[in-house]
Length: 247
Image (cartoon, rainbow, N blue to C red; front, side):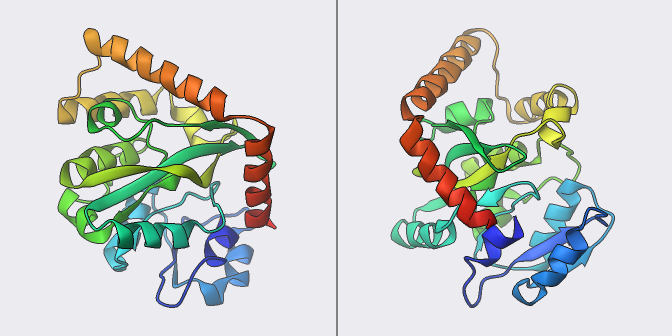
């Protein structure tokens, strides 16, 4: 993750790492890149409080967060800056999702339809690792809810899309690492399902009755779009970008 970020930073960019006392070699990696990291905070914080801490202590105009397993693809930060400069009415952007395994091999993609508040509010399809937003919009939306343990990104995006215009870019900005030991894989049917339901109730997003049919249609659309997009050319292109990010 770290190399995929520091390789794209320019003067004035801020990169904050919050490490909850890792014992897997992370401290050595952080030491190697220390000169390129704005601040390293070592604190026994859970994920959501750690993310909120980072945003509360630093003030970049454009913001995102990246979890340890995930990667930014080459050129992403430059693309994001250009997009926000060109579209001042847009407060947040995201892209399609590329999935990689624990060996950084590209496995599949989500090719998403254009953004819809109605759909993305009810079904959590916004790929967190690809999402970037303006600081003012985050502040207006209230930031990350530190009381959540799984659906903090979904909750934040529900509030963010009420504050500003969100845009799905027709590209791949990052790679999501999908493996059996991940937090997503282990909590999605327990804590994850409960918190997603909590977020839907919080903002009045029903998925019952006719909305259940809409949800099935959305899943089918994503599957069809992803199947049409997926092929050797896309896989090789994404793999080359992932390889460059981890090299």
